Image (cartoon, rainbow, N blue to C red; front, side, top):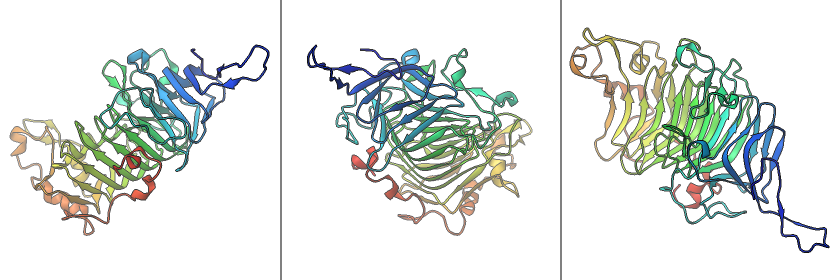
Length: 422
């Protein structure tokens, strides 16, 4: 039985003469949510296709609720979208996390994990998208943008603005699993997408497991995120774009099996709003197979990475250098210059690196080739410079580190801990 958002089904009538009915343990949601609505933990909620909360409405998801996305791609990809001007109140707890997963997951009401899907089961549904009115730095100086994969005719895909204090709601103790289905051509959905989300929004204790694309991606905005864990993503674990200016504090990245970067970071894309700087601190980044790199600091990256611990990677930091003139090797503003300037906009400090395989500490990316690699205009001792940037409290270490995440914040409520992978 197909149900539109906000409609509850009742099944199991005992007798034509009896008035009492048994509430269904399932409910399906699709299309627009135009008025305040609550999803309760006594039902498993299914998302079919795109389900979005329109401007002015609030979706409340009670602690312990399980939401399952239907299988499908592109127009049929299951995604929950919190449009700019709407709110999501999803306040779980360590004992009653809110769980987004696939309809293929055999998890049942009251459980924290099912038994039939693992970290290799990706792309079984879409993901969670939150959009707000905080500042972004998009191409061509645009202060607004449209999230990838949503048709241009749909207003609920727009994000960005001028209000860094914008509030899109509360997300706490939320686990997002087995997502990343294709939303539009070439556009897989991240586990959690944050487009222009403001710092009036509360986000802490979030988990993304086995997503095809990125675990969490920020498109500008200023929202602070505490206690985040990403496990076995297909692309990047934490991806920062469009001059995100918030803080991510106490995070864990565990990579393995066809993954890309632990951190992928870009700075401003346009000429509007170019002064925002992120902070990433108290993070533990682990590669179980040595693939990918710990951090790819790309175009105009500006911000601070501190008190982190990186381990298991064959390559740790990529620091992009680029040239406006490759004949004369005229260097232009990029991650490298932001890192090496006398007053740097990019700071990597008080962090530790460990690997047993003589890793590459840092390189300068594909732009550092040909004559520009031998021109002397770039400091070829970048590895030593990075080591110096780490500071007196952080360097290459031979084992464990006092830096990194507090893992106790991820006990009990996460898929990672419940499956013995923390």
